[in-house]
Image 1: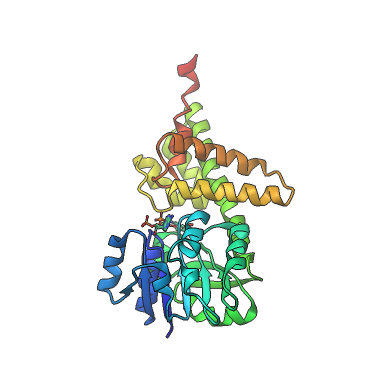
Image 2: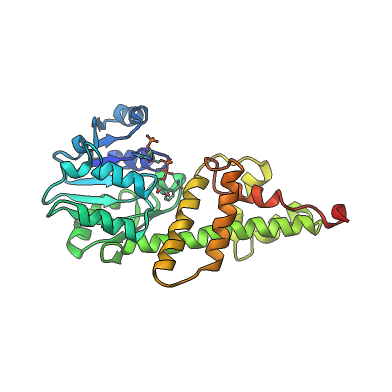
Length: 293
Ligand code: NAP
């Protein structure tokens, strides 16, 4: 079993740290809002007073934070992780921050610190039950060292060199953003054409966007969007997709359209709701054609 620092106890980080504890690892947690450490401390985790304190004497430090800025602050800000990390230790960066931010983090780490990117697919239920899909960018040696730890969290796939896990995650999330917006637009069209909502949802459940429809149908029908994957994170991810594409000379028109809808949902106050709340924003623009006549 390993000594692990875990930083970032949000919706995903909390159940992931719990899984590591349940697997028998020695886990030391840190979170900016200290209240979030209580449940883990009651289950046997030790609580660090700062990121640099968290990393002392561990083999591996895991970050699961909101944004690239948050990752930079926790690593390189005052009392940051990088103050303590040293030769032989490994940083496993599991947030969704894209390959550019990950590589800039890796380049600033002290000499001899391994840098592994391991972002995840799957939301809170998958994190809780240890069924995440984990996309790992790492050297072969580092991969073999972190594999047993990551296997407590889900299905582990070695994508390639450092940075390639972060790249794969953007590829995956490009499809997630496109699918939820396609769901909203299909429902808006159906509403304008005066189709029965239940019949439309039944048909869409077996369409190419079926997984998104089946996962988020209950939210749409109840008009309630409790956050599982916050809309602010989906917006951040689509921006990362667009930036990565532009850096490679690509203009992804569908990604830009999805990002525009997500931005509009943010303006409607949905940033901290589930990302499926974008469906409500799109639907709010629709009305049956007859009523417009
Ligand atoms: P979350 O619930 O919003 O939690 C965000 C975490 O980041 C919290 O621990 C928060 O600390 C911390 N944080 C934010 N800004 C910070 C800063 N400047 N300095 C220090 N800590 C900071 O997010 P989440 O849903 O767990 O997602 C975490 C990451 O995983 C994101 O990159 C997200 O895109 C990705 N992801 C999420 C899902 C999902 O379904 N939720 C699925 C796959 C990937 P406080 O508690 O102090 O605010």
